[in-house]
Structure formats: C-alpha cells, structure tokens
Length: 438
Image (cartoon, rainbow, N blue to C red):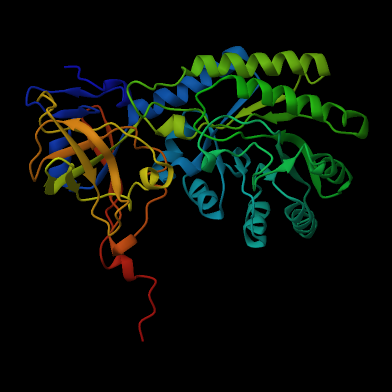
C-alpha cells in the first residue's frame, strides 16, 4: 500500500496489512524489537539504484565520466563495498575515511583525497599507499606534498581545487564555491593562476586536472553550467605553459528531497546540464579528451536512509505548543540545529491513521535547540509509538556525537526481506575506551 510522503522514503517503502511501515521487505516494528531505537535503516535497493542512475545518466551522455562516492555523507566499510560493486570510486576527506575505504577492499587508485587542511601524516599515509589523486587545496599543502612525494620517490597525481566565484544559492554553511570560503584557490584573487604555475613547475607532483565544488544541496542547475564555463575557460590559457588537462571535476552537491513538496531535479537533468556544458566548452577549447569527475554523496545515501525513534515524554502547553520527545535528537542528527534543516515524519506503527494534531518532535539532549521537526501534523501520539524520519541517510549518522555521553545508534541494511547489522549500537563501556583512568 502506498502512503503520503512516499516520495522522500526509500523506493521499497510501503505499508503492510498491520498498518506498519515496511522497508526493504522488512516490517520496521520487527527491526525495532530486535535492535532498539534510535536506529538507522538503509535500503540496499535504493542505494544501488542511485549508484546506477548516476553511472548511467552521466556515462550515456559523456562516456568519459568517473563517478566517485563522497564518503563524508556516510562512511562505513559495508557501504564502501556496495558502491564499489556498482562501479564507483570514493572521494575521502580524512585519513580515517581513506583507511575505511582500504579496509573495504578498494584499490588506492580508485580513491581521491580532498580537504582544506590535510596533515603531514595524512599525506604521508596517502602517498605511501599509492592513492589515485590528491585534490590540493592550498599553497601549504602543495609545498608539503611535493616534499613528501620526493621522499617517497614518486610523482603524485593531483587536481587543484579552484574557487570559481559561483553562488549556488544554498545554505551559507554549505556554500563553498564563492570568494569568501575556506576552500580552494580563488580565480578572482589570482591565487588559482599562481597555484597552476607552481604545480606545473614542481618535479614530484603532476597536475592532471582541476576541481570545483559549489556547495550543497544544490536544487538549481544553472550554477553547474556557469562553473563549468568559468573554470574551463580560465585554465585554457595555461595550455601554452604545459598544462595537460586530463580531468575536470564539477564536484557534487546534488540535492535530495527532504520535504515532499520540495523535490530536486532528477539525476538526468543534472547530467544533461553538466555534460552538455563540458562537451561544449571542451570542444571549443581543445579539451576533447578530458575526463569528467562527479562526486555524489548525499544523493547516493540520503533517500536510502530512515531514522527510527521511540516516543517518550509528551508536554502539552495549551495554546502554545505540544512537545513530543523521542529517544534521540541532535546527537544522532545535528542538521536541524546546525542548518535549520526540515524533515518529514510518519507514525511508523500506525501509518494510515489521520494526521490530526500539530506537534514538535523534540530530542532528549540537554539543549533547547534540540528539535528535530517543529510544528508537524501527525496522528495522535503516545509513549511507545515509533516515529520514522526519511531522507536521513546523509550526514545524520556521519555527524553524530556522544553529547551528554549518549551512545550512537546501530545501523542496519535491509534488502528483500532480510536485514544485516553493519554498525552495532555503542555501549556505555565504549564511551570510556579512550579514557585514561589512574
């Protein structure tokens, strides 16, 4: 049975004859009974479908395309294996993500390393393991990487992250392609030109491409087109200096639907705009053989993930607000507090009950700002009810914390009526594993 808000849930979501939410063929009430709450569920069919959509839609339009999964959205060894099975490489932003990717069996050559302040130890590890590409973000890193590569007796392939000065019209905290950003070499200030000339001259690094990332989530298409035109037009003048542009990355930032009435363009439209812009500009500038790199992260895992919570205390302030507290909150999803992000929710154990009251879903953490969803219409709620929040697969788990010394949730993948635990729930003993107790 279909239900309201299905467009923001995983593609396998339905309602069974018990009036329960079903994901991946699994009754979520059975999973809650087995694993408890808070609980993160990932639908394998949706994960694979999104990987396949990006591979198909971009490669059909521009065959020389490489799809990298942006691991910061959510990183786990099982997830890394899954995206690799679908033909994706991985883009990491820390030695930790790099180590997980290697543990999952990925070839170092299929991994790109981003980040605005990579440490010497991180670069030593990456170069020593034979990483495919390092996306250099600043002059300090450029100098350090050249020295490290010399010491390892290798020539390290790099991309330079350029800031094109394009505003994608998203949240200020997730806008990265403008002048006032900590990321990348600005074209506007002349730093990008300086970085390219320095990179061409250095003996132990090889500049094979350039990268730009505008921010996320980006619902508009025009910023991508403008960024492609800006960056490729800019780097063209360095062909005479010896720049052999083999790769161009337009980054990621592809949006997902958090609210049923605010859905993003389909992958095909992103692909149309980006590949058309690259083909047009590459042909006119003599870059016909350039490889296009795209980096979806949120768009791969966001819709696939659903967060489950159990209702606890309910506080009704007549004429003001009704607070319904759940057993999680900003410790397992800080996005509403950090970005003022908005989500949908359903009563997962009574899916077809009518939504009759406006409530605010509050977390259990000791902050007034710990609100998951403010003023949402839901059926009448009682302690013990199960709330499901869709579109929770990106950044919620990866940004989770142990604030108030709460444990982080378990994570389960569901598929064809089966479930498998890919991250166990933390214990209180886990919270003290790094403590030094005299």
